[in-house]
Length: 224
Image (tube, rainbow, N blue to C red; front, side, top):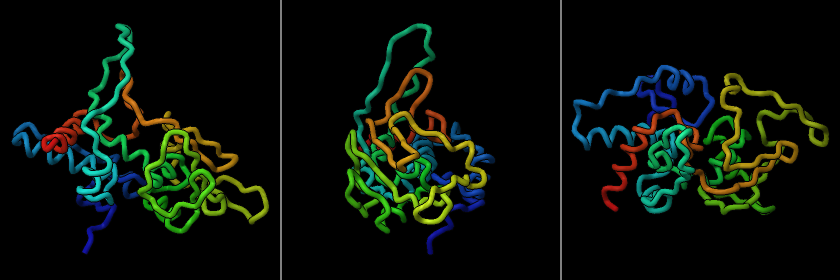
């Protein structure tokens, strides 16, 4: 039997605006790993970050299709800029190309699980064609569109102008990553490029510090 997604005991963060998930994130106390072995530290880093970044993607699928040991970065070299975060913050960058991730990141759904349902039910198009595969990896410049009637935050009768009614607790998460260009008038998104790392920050939304992403990267890179 599968464990509950929003377990208040396990407290694993998910890509969702669910109130129980937000409670888990708000009350998250990352485990002190200083007294653990290096492998144990890597495994904990992997467990925590993978629960958020693609929990329904199997380990085999992630390593074969989405893990890239060669990570890109941008560094302007200016002394006045903040220190560059470890490039390992981009460990899960390829997952951001998934169709269900893009629908969620574009704020068309309150969770990545709801985004997957939209894809499966034929409510999402890529370049004008229905695509029922949530795991589809889009290319730079692809246009992703969602049926407005299927977006939970849009209310109204078909054929009339729909009103936006935000979900409870969603306000802190209503932002768009820089690698997406969203048009809410047409309920569409353009995937511009892969996420990158910049001085002082990374473009991929995550509730975890760079150190945990570094541990996860080292866990997966050991076999490469």
